Image (cartoon, rainbow, N blue to C red):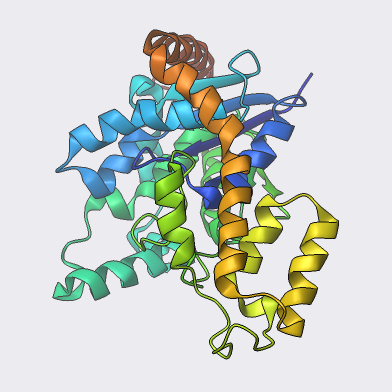
Length: 335
């Protein structure tokens, strides 16, 4: 029997290279070896976008097309929409009794995001909603509703998974051994940096290259990428390790000989930044072309995307119903 993996994405925008190299590329490898559930977490997206539901709705389909385009196979992966699984909402309510507010506020991931919101909005965090504070509880429901055994995560998400394990242990200590305690599947890929040198590539930071970006958009973004600030003139030697252009060369260029040439010429002052950026633009377009061609197929056949989501959601719903029956029986509410 294959182990079950549960992972997901919030549909708030299209996928960028950070998503691909940080998670998506690894998911493509995992789909052959695991019973794979992939959640389009529209309910969690609404914790930040409750006043813009159309954005979330549109991106449910946009992000699904992106995921299909990078090579996830609907015959191997159960794509499902979170809001179509009422058992997740039901579990979230039950689990909320097992977690204190102070524990949620101590969660490092939640603390960091609350701090960002306070900095952005001021008002001492009065903009923090009940739904936002409780999203780790919702994530625990996501994982356990499908008997998830492994969860692909980065280091920054480990506190959320630990919160889930705490909830599982608390539930089992009260109601009996019903739930499996999930384990992390750590990616060995570090977070992808932004074009501006920021440690994180993000939608809100404006420093991302998206999988759907056309050639002109890529050209404009790459030409503005941060290079070694100490390289003033074209013939000045530079440090490629502090240059975001070389950083992206390493991501999208599989030709090691060519990479060595880029690196050595940069160090020797035999390569100008404009030349290097133009070469990166060419390599970036070559890298994205097969992804974009596959995505074009789904753009032209939206009914297939709808069918994939319907089939995956139906499969996920049946699994969640089975799990919920066990939970309700253990809690003595299977009237």
